[in-house]
Length: 271
Image: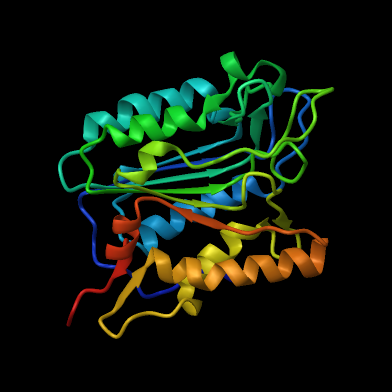
């Protein structure tokens, strides 16, 4: 059992107008390598959202393994969210599992439970499509956390047989002017590692450690995404280099003005 598996007792104030979609795929339908601990990542992330970050249970959808097929991603991203999101709402999207590059188009894809890297057009979920759909929501802010990678070089990425790993951009132009902020596990040409000693994805482990209290909080009782990123980035880089002889550099992507204003994850109720 990892230290982050113990849920902190102190909770955020209730967030009535906040919605989350949490996806974790460790086991895939076809002969793809396991994305180790991805389902544990997602299950625990769902618990942190409801027990620490103040989300209402009915507003958090957690889909694991065979319940996270491409049709499930389409259903919840393209129908469930738009039917619920109103002005000033907050949205949190989390994906733990494999990503894949399309070497022909240099596009990044999320690989659902029934995904096949040889047929990404029909079985994968394009990252650009995700960003486009989220940008159309009337939400005040959208946070996307991706504990996956898209290089095809291993880690939490896969690639069609016979194809070479590629480096590609994981930032969509929409992010430059929209309300979506993305925390990605690594740069486009890197791999995202699992932290076997802790039983979670490397990004997810330190993200939750930050929420647990290791990321510095302002004296006003808030915890911002940028504070968590500032904490986890050197931690992920250090462990990846030391334990795996690998370079993994988390990315915080989005409109600079949105990032400057800050995205609050925790805002304590005042006594």
